[in-house]
Image (cartoon, rainbow, N blue to C red; front, side, top):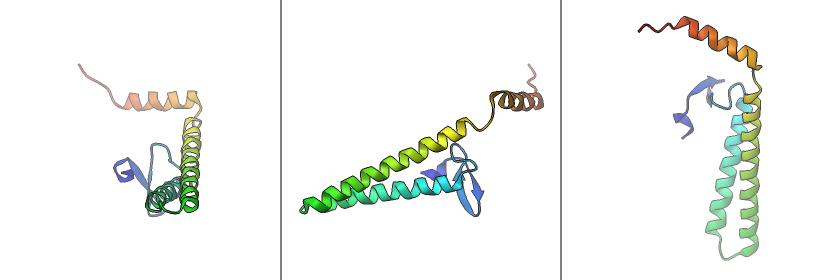
Length: 103
């Protein structure tokens, strides 16, 4: 799924440019948290006859999902504050000057 997003190669591994641009460690931490949450959820589904272990796996999966959500919100917040508004407008204007539309 992540390979379908636009990405760039950073140190030999693809990193999506939408939210995790210039943050490859945050992207890898996000992937690890998602993998741990799926592992905990699957283990909780497979172990149904031992309530203590099942409860531990459910809590583990929920904690991993919350950490993945926190990492995603952190990366989104950093992406939103990357450029001051006046610099972003200048970049858009210079890009628009390059492309002229003829009617």
